[in-house]
Every structure is written in structure tokens, then in C-alpha cells.
Image 1: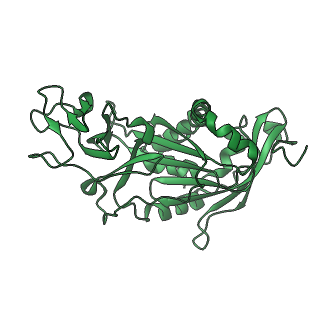
Image 2: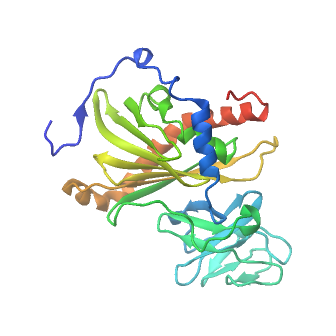
Amino acid sequence: MSERIPLRLFRSRPWPEQEPTWRDAKPALIEAALKRAQAKPSGNWFVVAGSREVKADAPFGRTVAGREVVLWRDRGGRLRAGAGECPHLGAPLCDGAVHDGRLVCRWHGLALDGRKFGAWSPYPAHDDGVLAWVRLDDVGGEEPLLEPVLPERPPQGSVDAVMTVIGRCEPDDVVANRLDPWHGAWFHPYSFANLRVVDAASEADDRFLVEVTFRLAGRVGVPVLAAFTCPEPRTVVMHIVSGEGEGSVVETHATPLSPGRDGAARTAVIEATIAHSARRGFALARPAAPALRPLMRWAAARLWRDDLAYAERRYALRSTGRLPT
């Protein structure tokens, strides 16, 4: 195929005949990478939603680590955040309205402008243009940071989409899933082929470097070199470091919620895909971003349909002391 076209024909073995990866996917190696991620500072910042989910005309609510949080935008479009319970009688502020940049409770009309009101406290909020974050110092228990720890992202002109799914697990189980790149071609044969881990994470070079072909249809795919790193405890980032889409990233953020009715942990997987390409055709396609975003979210959700089963299984085994080590 022409060098102007990123697609390539590839050959791969039938699924049962591909090279086994279980010998390289050592539990101790994955656990060591997870522990190094857990030791990194988060500054008490948690991803709550995609930036576009917090609109100017309505509040957005989510429970983070058992804490009700409400987000909205003020008159200037700036992100605001605070406790989700109204200080008057405890009404859910996420069911209220936003009027003239103020958050209005639907029970009795109490309007909050983002400043402290009685027992109600605002929370530091950050909008990075793709994701909406909130800082919960008494939940995180770390030294606060002025802004969340963000990975390197592609330059302006990229196309981003954010997908959220919720699993019966803890954030560590989500992060551990991403720190096991060896499962890709076995667990997701519809998306990945010819996967090879070139470099496994170590203390000296704390990243996984992976050669893989993103399968599009049949024997047509896009080969890339990808690096997996953890900028903070609840985030795993995949950077495309070589090949088509170089500079693109997939950020997987794991946000703890409240336990479910069964008492088991719940975690929101909030994944941001930020696509970039230096090709002229990509620049021409950018105006179609609103139509591309649903497809990007669908592709991410398809993978997480399986990966949540992985994370939930890990959580179930950990909870009963049966996780292999």
C-alpha cells in the first residue's frame, strides 16, 4: 500500500495458535508496576466527567469515594464544584438548575454562586479542556496540588472523546488491567493482532513499550508502537510513540464511587481518547468531530465490556484472598 495510506495488510496466527504470553505476564511484575503507580502523588484530584458533560444550563452530579459532588458552570463558563447536598435541608443539588451562573436548589430556591455558604463548601475544580476534575483533600489525604497531574497530550487540532462505564471493582483493579498489556491480542482479538511487549516496566524505565497492530477489518490494520505509563495512582496513559497517529493518547482514569447495594466497591472508568495525526486528511476530517465522537466512544466501550470483566474478576479474587501472586 502507498505510504500515504496508514493501513497495512498483516498476517497473524489463528487465535489458539498465537504465541502464549502468560510466561511474560508475571503477576509479581504487574503488581510491582501497580505499587509504583500507587506511590505517586495525585494531589487529591479525581476525574468526575468529560468536560462536555458539564453544560452551562444544568448541574452534573456524581458520587466520588462516597462523597456527593455537584459540578456546574458560572457565567463565564468556568467550572465550579461543591458538596452535592443543599445546606438548607440536604436536597440533591444535582437535580437543581443553573441560572445566571448560579446553582439553584429545586426544593426551596437557594442559589449558590460557588462561594462558601453556611456549612456548604465549594471544592477546587479544574477543566483541562477534555476532562472535569475535582479536588477532595479530606478524601485523598495527600498534600494538595494546585492542578491535577496531567500527561503529555497532542497539540491543538486533535479530536477527543470521553467514555464512562462503571464496574464492580476498585481503582487498583482497573489500573492493574492496563498494566497487563500481554492480554491484548488474547482477550481482544477483534481489536489487536501481533502484539509484542518490547520492554516491560521496571524501576529504571517505568513504562511498558508495546508493538501492536490495531485491527480494522479482516487482515487490514494499523501497526503502532505504544507506551503505557502511570502519571498518578488512578491513571494509566497509552501514548502512540511511533506509527500512524503518533502523539495520540488514551487516558484511562479510575474514579472510586460509593459501594453498591451489595456492599461491593464501584469504580467509574472514565476514558479519554485524544486522537491526532499529521496527515492532511486528518485536518480535513476534524470538522466532523461531532460525528466521530460517538464512534470513538463505542470503540472504547467495546474494549471495556471485556476489560471490566477482567477487573471485576480480579476484585472478586482479591476480596476472597484467592488472587494468584
